[in-house]
Image (cartoon, rainbow, N blue to C red):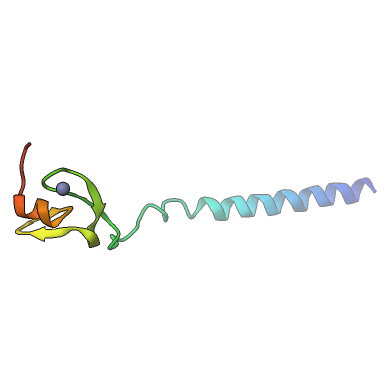
Length: 76
Ligand SMILES: [Zn+2]
């Protein structure tokens, strides 16, 4: 009976080591994501953040609304 327990313990240890080695080899894959349309941009007028798909493009700048696009970039 003692031998069987040792054998089971060895099998569990080997499985654990293999799973750990496989998991360790995949580090860093999550960090690389391509840019998506849901990317956040900031309004050139008021600085609020919004999805790029909802932003208004005026010239080379992005704005949160038609009004801010009309007003243009401003410090105040
Ligand atoms: Zn704005």
